Length: 198
Image (cartoon, rainbow, N blue to C red; front, side, top):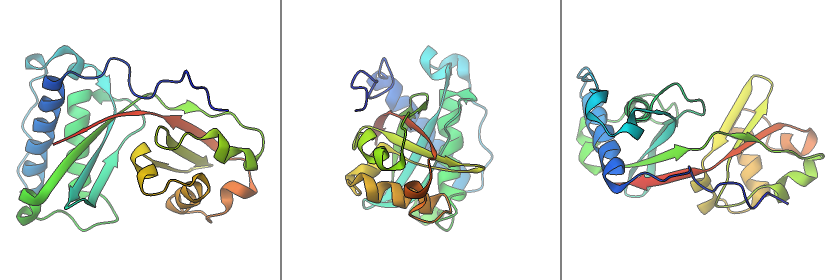
């Protein structure tokens, strides 16, 4: 069974002011990126300390509840505030599933930020054990097969609550056959998120 003691979101959740600051930075970066303006230099010294610390996020854009773009990272490389700005622009302009966001859409877009924990390997012995090792609604899941890799945020469980279907869809996202997870033991990592939105 999954370890119930595993954290369900990053330790020490952000304060309301820190969340609001990140959402404001994401909104400004989104507007600048979509309108073709250069991104302003981020004054890290003016930000709360935790927003200056390294962190990684996914930024999700929706219009009327429908996905319009989602891009993020699993490896920490930037200060949290800069990571959010980078992924806000990428979600608007670089999500291969959608055409770039147009300026006329900006007023309709809602921004959601998911702050990730460090992904941890999920141990299991046989493919048929994998669905029971996942925690629907809590775990973000990363599948790795050689050079191929794909992830679903925990929020995806809301639309795909069955672990077997979740894994099959994640295999397809990775560019593999939907049954790959049943046929061989894949490298699997899980993580949790602190999610907040406008």
